[in-house]
Length: 207
Image (cartoon, one colour):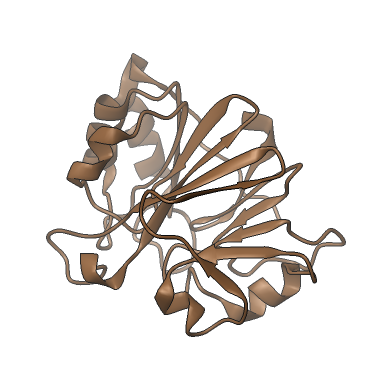
């Protein structure tokens, strides 16, 4: 499963299918293959880029997000927290994502993370979130976690989440790009701090 997860920079990923699932496409290149599913976690510009979504969507692409994104993009299907949908061989569940200490991503904004169950692996994409009580209910095989601390998890918080969730693999994101406050050094610190609790994969950006 890990070899099918590709980091596209910042918080943008693609999971090669079937189905082909893009998460928060941002500054992506146009693909000859349309996305089967596009997951958008919030209406923030780095997650909800209409131009990038239009590069990837086809007539049958399913876009899943919240009410705020639906107000900006046509044909969005809204998922409520803990609601799930099956697409081909994947089951996709929305989970709450929000900040407790920062007002950048308040709970009432309806931000989402996702648990993607595909080929017997559960992949948790945290989205714009700090540590929340709802995380106690998530036990993924793979955890994709922000580490930049801009209203979301920082390195220390992400390590705490790994200790709590006990995934087999952890992937840090939201680092190394223009405007990101986290760097490769932060990703390496995260890996060192996690230690043997999980296998940390520091991804190489692909486009």
